[in-house]
Length: 191
Length: 226
Image (cartoon, rainbow over all chains, first blue to last red):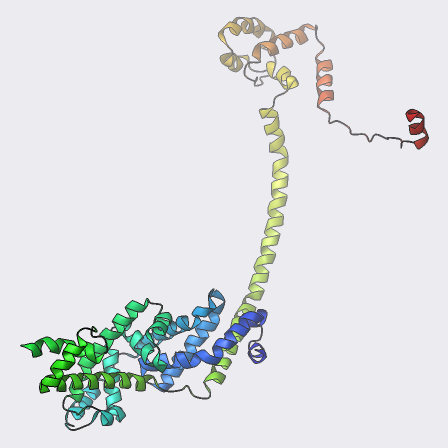
């Protein structure tokens, strides 16, 4: 707390010690969550870190507005997700030619096992592309479910949605992803 | 054909969302049908591979400098916010000083302007008896129009006596009394100056004088009780 208060000269945090203490607690465990959400959208560690920092900075600016501090994680997750999407939009579309070439290369590997595919960088790119193609409301639940194996209840809390909605969206997201990626494991033996 | 029926259940089964009563049926069919067994296995592999793929996308830790950089950015943010306020401080101080000067000027102007018109308006809105006396000397034509018909005869009789006097407005309903008083003053039956003096005396503000009360002595109180 003292370290944080010392690093915020003349700020609102130094004026309100309880606010600083609360924010310091969040600063200890939430950046990792923000980083992973951003990474799930951006697929680039440097950019994800930048967006996570921006989200934390926004959280710091508006922390005094948050009445229920228990909702901070969900607030941060949604803010990070929106910032990451904005970053993607600002960057513009990715190079389609690169992806097409990757897909062609993967289809040319008829006997690749699931393990080999999962380990490959190209597979990661394909999954990322399929994930990017999902509608935003499906994408956020899919990313959150993948982070540290959050269950439906935890995802619902973070996304600010009812559990039933999260369950149905998660099912739909997995189904769509499976449809998109099915061609990659068409002729591969399971496991 | 039963395989078509079960193909729709494959995805649900792979995601663990197939209805409980359907699962044994699907598994029983898969045991007998090689194609469906392979399709189910493939569906499970795909979904497993999707989950693992997405997990691999979000796996990772921020760099060790993340917290340091974040703290630095927050500190910069606070500093820049403070310096923004400091940049506006001279402007705000000047604006405040100007506002104070303007407020003082407006207060002074309104005090000067308010003195005379207020006196006039009081006189107009609350005409006293003396004003009525003076007013009755005024324009009889204007005042006569506001009087009731039965007063018109009397006011016409007094009109001749006051035509030479200056024109002044008369309060509504007081024309007849004012004219009679005016006639009495003109004929010398009533002393107008004495009337004005009495009126001025009654308008003078009351003087408040402190009353001295002698403290009650105990001896007097004892006498009274005995």
